[in-house]
Amino acid sequence: MPTSKNTPHHEPINVSYIHRPIAMPLRNSPVKKGPRLPGLRQLSVLAHNLTASFSRVSVANTGTADSSYPNDDWGYGGGDLVGQMEHLPKFQRLFVEVQGLLYYPSKLAYHKVSGTVNLRLRFKGDSQCDLRRSKVYSGHPYLRFYALALLRKLCGLENIRHMGFNETQFVDLNFTFAIQEFQEGSREIQAKEFIVGNVLSFYRSHAASKLEFNIGPLKGYLFAPAILVDFEWIAENWDKYVNGRDPFEEFRER
Image 1 (spheres, one colour):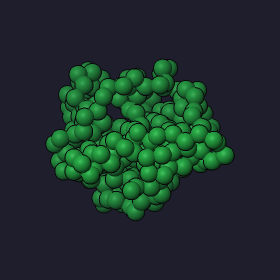
Image 2: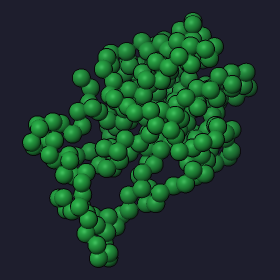
Image 3: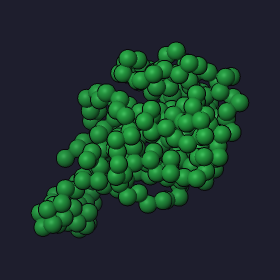
């Protein structure tokens, strides 16, 4: 059973080999407002992500560098705020499209699979996605596969072709999936989603109290008198032992 602990480093992989993405319902994002420009807190979060990314990703493993950015590490273009300002309307439109598709998969949230996934999305001359040159960087394997499926669904949208991207441009996407003690409100979530340069950061969370316990098909909370039936556990184990189905099949590479 996967855990929320950090997983070993995985080399960036090419996304074009994924031929059958998982079925992903189109859900409305809980955040209704558009993307915000970052404040000091958001910039601090981004700096932490960039530092972690630089320490894990080798330039030699990220493909051909764009001529505008000799350093091809993920998030490198986030520091070029002035140079990327003219493309801000494109980034904002892309930001809204991703928000509408992104959610925390209930299966992964139930098993407390959390972490961060970084992707680089490149484009062709007609503004369509170039999945052959796009890459996904380190993260939990299940989250990486989910992010790849989301990327392919995003690239299938007609709106992408009308955003005006070209083959010299790329966008770095950051997805953070967090397990929190309490349910976060829309204002808290919005504060953690922002645009810096060509880096688009997204955040989804799931509430799971440390006082909650699971014993087979039963669940409850410490110091609380009620014991509840864990229907998620029943459904998962029925599929696993009766139907012979892997509970994480939709999140595994095929």
